[in-house]
Length: 243
Ligand code: AMP
Figure 1 (cartoon, rainbow, N blue to C red):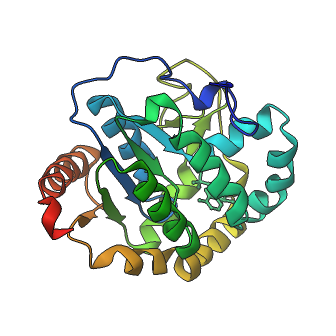
Figure 2: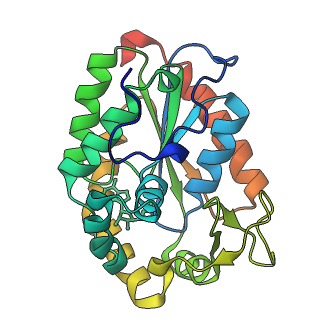
């Protein structure tokens, strides 16, 4: 092992060396949903509870920017405008991350794939890994609710976690809270447009698969968590022959 790839800072490897956990091999989950749907929160919770690795492309990019990584700094202008970072950069980043030992028990992807090109590349990676199917969950929330949530959203400057709207400091590490640069209203509208144009087709790419599920994200956190867990467990039981 030659250590972390160039774009991935130390925080991209929080669980490196961790014990394998209780899950059977290869619980591979993609958490889909528009910005503000709550997919990051649910992905983090699910990954923690099941001892899986969470891979958030947005978090990796923001961490790499904080660390002054040149590739990430180039991507920053696009992120600040609410546009997507180019496919080759993102695909290489995810591929390198999925090759690390701590990803071999399975993973929860948050924010990837966002284009059909990324989804096709992930299929190729999955075939090479040969380690269980992809379970795809779409967290659905109506657009007006997304705008409302994004306007209120605050993240921790130190650990990058989302905070509750009423919180004064990060519940996890006590760090200061700030609004994400791309959560201001103009950029939010652009991100929602990009989602409609570029990421919605990814749902169509997956929709016919027996391991595709939709969860109603306009419910309490607990209710979404409950439905999501049941759907993922159900999808994980789909017989290999039907895939
Ligand atoms: P997120 O935290 O997932 O909302 O991502 C924040 C920003 O990072 C996005 O608006 C994009 O500019 C960039 N980004 C994150 N993931 C991807 C991806 N899979 N493809 C392209 N750009 C991405």
